[in-house]
Image (cartoon, rainbow, N blue to C red; front, side, top):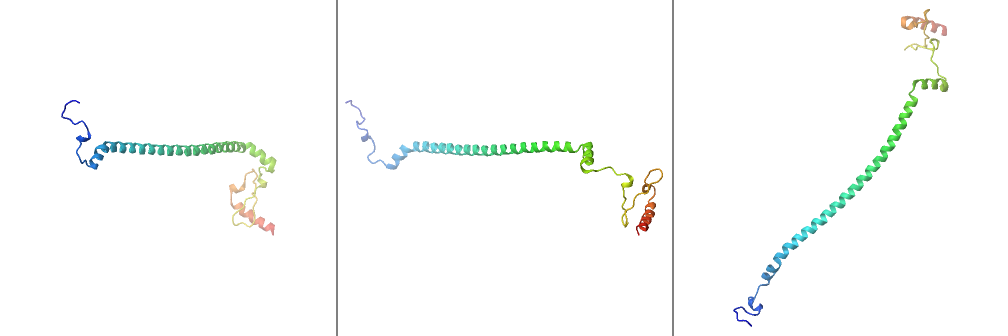
Length: 156
């Protein structure tokens, strides 16, 4: 072989009693930094996956709630339209008047059909018609007391 100052065997170049701790420190110091970084990346990936799954689950729940509310809104709109039609049908004054006359036999009362009830009076008093066709109650209230007294005497 060639003449040199270096020994041929590499093992012979190492110190005779190397410390095991120093070997691990030299060999695994760089590797442990990579392991820590990989563990942190793996944890971040798992965490982002969990958060994504939670977000998707929340989205599905919110979407279902939205669909239920849309169904309820459609039902309420139909009910509102039905009530508007019913309100328009029954609020027409001529239709109400014709139904009252036809179905219930109602009519507009004449002066003879009207009775005025006075508080504290024992008998209902019919209004006294004057010659011009106006109601005497509007003209003078004392006529009612006189008519009340006459009606009370006639009823005895």
